[in-house]
Length: 220
Image (cartoon, rainbow, N blue to C red):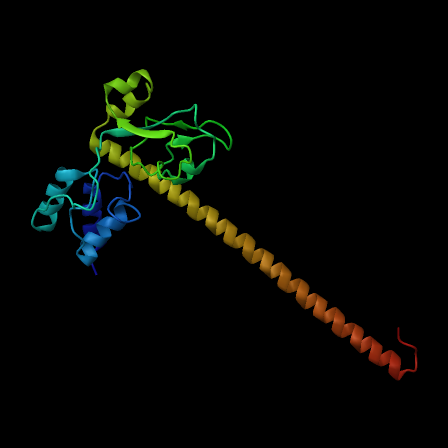
């Protein structure tokens, strides 16, 4: 079994966009696959050649070109919403792995470009195709001044930000599922108790009927 320290080292080299283009649910899962099952080191689209080189050096494996079945992406990117066509369906909010989209149901949504990693997971579920991925550069500051906050961060700081945001969302989802499980369990327990009580009442009524019949009293 590969130690967590090795998985951690690999995970630290990944950009943490959680884009799933590698075929795994998140960067951590891909890191684990590289360490434990020998998964290829050339499946990180946003990381590109830089990440492949780093993984090659760390794992002592031959360097490979980016897997041809994976579409190359640009790490310096962010999402934009054309608010005129946003219908407030919240599907993009659910899809975003790092909580960089805010908005309420049937209300126009907004991208937090000070956080957005440009992973593109919000594109497929959008029914109106009102989201696009654009370069994260100085030109975007006129539309989204908050993007400058992310632009000024080093890639390692961005990765740490995205990792933390992803973990926060996963923890919140886990807690929500646990609460739901508790609610279902409590509901089932209540139903079981009611059925037991109902059975006992029926049994008690039957005993009462037999006693009344034995005593010669009319039974309704």
